[in-house]
Image (cartoon, rainbow over all chains, first blue to last red; front, side):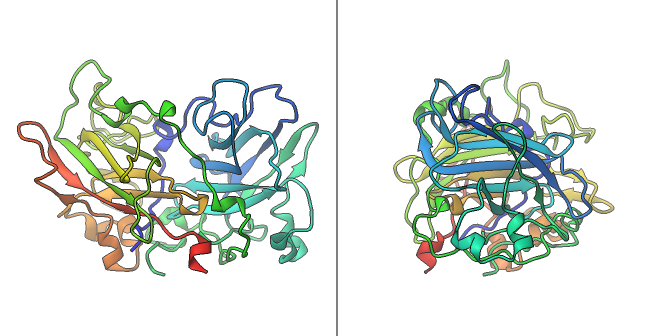
Length: 163
Length: 223
């Protein structure tokens, strides 16, 4: 008898974001990379009222919400900007992927996906045809930067996982 | 199976361009999957005062003071201790302290409407707040949201993550609200409605509501 999901709505912005929530690693941390991209709807329009949560699967030394000290965190949260963009700075985990949840007005339950930082042999990637597989691969975009767009609907719709 | 709403529910207009058109893929059998773990929140990260939404301002907020408490449980009925519960809501006049909320109801300088706490050893959470007001939205003509408090709950694995809304018993707006009605099973819908509880109510102080949150199974438990 689980509790049903409801939309996060448009007005979470004064409650859920917290200081430096997108910085899982401090600026200049060795090996840190930035992942950035946009959240887009079925018309290709940016979604300005989405909230993303990133989980690396490793707790780190920095606390989930706390951002003091030089350590790293395994959890981050980022609301999208008016142009639908988000960003995270993190130290890549041992696994080749990051777990990502996207909440938004108009999503009655979040969508869950994975961001793969490398195209490696993997049970999930291996089960997908090339076009679908490509939606899970972050694209290197300059030094220490990856780009990953989330397309909620349409031809290039991101592969989502059961939630 | 019908606990959660579908992605596409056209009566809630914002779903039309945002609902994925393909079925989500089932989780692969992988006991090492990152999603089977989740972030752990330390007591140093959450101030005990964060659970009192009526505090922290120069004066008392306007409205009906309430206590909202309950337990966070997993699908087997086991309490989930030490998990983060976050809430946010409109004030008693139905206005959010958010710059994009244009509803012409007054802001309350003594109420922001956001709080958080960690569940105790028995999975219990407790907030002191103000009963939120209903408010209009532009989904369809004469659309009004029933009074509700948004809840964000983590659980023990990333796949248990839940964002939902708690409603108040007897609200006449339930029948007209597509977000509430998006849940197909009427019995599941009722699980979003808190119970008034005289044992939670404190004399001369605040009305009490009780509402438990039950998080879904992890895929490994489903197997």
